[in-house]
Image 1 (tube, rainbow, N blue to C red):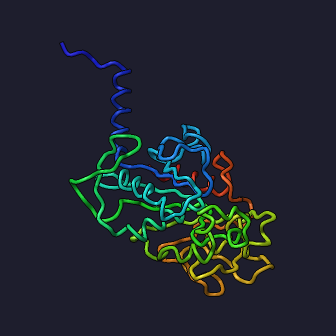
Image 2: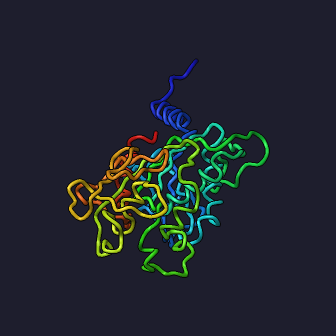
Image 3: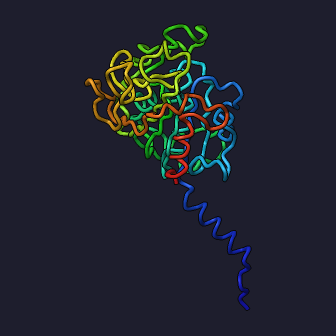
Amino acid sequence: MKLKPSVASIVVFLLAAAGAAQAGNYTLWINGRSNPNASLGSPADFSYWGGSPTLNVAAGVQPISVNWDGKSHIATTNAGVRKALDCYCTGSNWCYVAVHSAGNLQIGYALSQYGSSTRNASGVPTDGVCTGATGGAQQVGWNIKYVDVAAGAAGGSELADAGAWAMNEELVDDLKTATARALYNHNATAGINLYLYAGAKGAVTSAVLKGQNDSVVAYHSAGGTSGSSGTRLCNPGQWTCANDLTLGSGANEGGSTKWSFHSVVFRDDAEAYDHYANGSWAGVVSLVRAHIAANAK
């Protein structure tokens, strides 16, 4: 006699089916400067951001924390970022990527320098750390749907120029405005779109930073504006500077242009968001987390 399945077994089956349906999608979170308490390489350690994602703090489908030390040169730590991309964003897997501050330099460097290179396709990861695939299937670049950038530092920060941070820290050298802008070709993203969220709740550091800023990076950096140095950009109606950062991918007021495949989706006209996640998914990070939570499925 065929037994009728129990309610519990049906629930288990449905949950398993739902998990299988999303098994190929991941959300990678790449931190910025200063990550002292994180377990480097641990995909479950979200201490930089605000603790492990839960049902109450959604952070996208199958969130993975791509922890790097937040203090060493981008060129020497980028291998760990590429390792995560190879693991979770190749083969049948697709990724959403969310970055903060200097994490913008990490994903930009990876896409520019390696985004058109041949990668070993890993398929479904078999361990939490992802040791990387060897042999077997290969592909060009990574399967990335898009990159959300919170308070991006791809254009550097005048705080690094002014010596406001410890100058013996390797990353501080990379964050100097001229150095960050020359670190790689920011226009080369392997066709991946970067969506930028720029905060404007500046603090006492505002006198050092050019134009509207979130107290660490100015609009020229968070807004993906090209050029060899920072351009003074502000919100509409801000009397301290003449030219506004514009939404979208078009030129800013005054004619300065954005890097290719870079688009401003949030400009902080109300000056309500600062740079800091504060261990609670705060500041500009809160906006990216909300967008990822709603759209990274």
